[in-house]
Image (tube, rainbow, N blue to C red; front, side, top):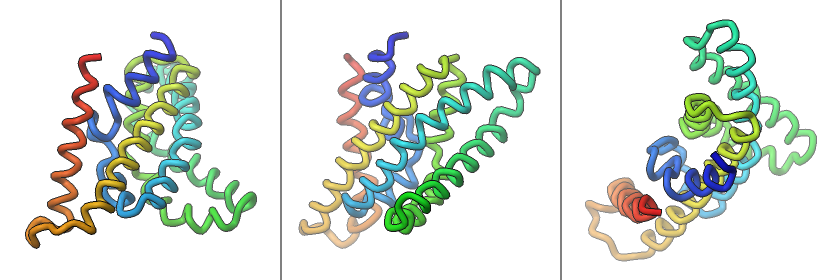
Length: 189
C-alpha cells in the first residue's frame, strides 16, 4: 500500500473520529473552543507518529517473534502512557508555557482511544514502521480536521438561537452525527 493511499484514506475516508468512532470523548470535550482543539491536535500530530513507530517495532520484533500477541493491548497501553509521559517531561524542559497547556490534555492523550486504535489498526494491517508513522500522522491530521470543523460549528451554534432542550450535549451530538455523515461522502473516492 502506498503512503499516499494510506494518508488520504486515514484523513478523509476512514477518519479515526468520524468513521471509526474512536476518540469521541476528547473530540467532544476538547472542541468547546478552536484554541483547545488546536492544542490537542498539535500534540497528537507529534505523539501519534512516534507511538505508531514504536508500537509497530514492538509488535513485529517482540510480540509476534515470541508468540506474545495476546499481550498486544496491555503492551500498547503501557507504551502510550510511557511516551506521553516522556513527551510531557521533554516539553517541560523546552517550553514551560506550553507545558501548562499540555497538563489539561494529558488525560485525553493517555486514554485516547484514537491513539490506541491507530496503533492497533496499524498492527492489524501489518504495516511497516514507516507505513505506521504515515498512518499515525494521517490519523492525527484527520483528528485535527474533524475537531477543528466541529469546534468551529460549536462556536457558531453557541451564538445561535436554539431550543433549550437541544442546548449543550444534544446539539453537539447531532452536529457530530451530521459531520460524520458529511465525511461518509468521501467513501466513494
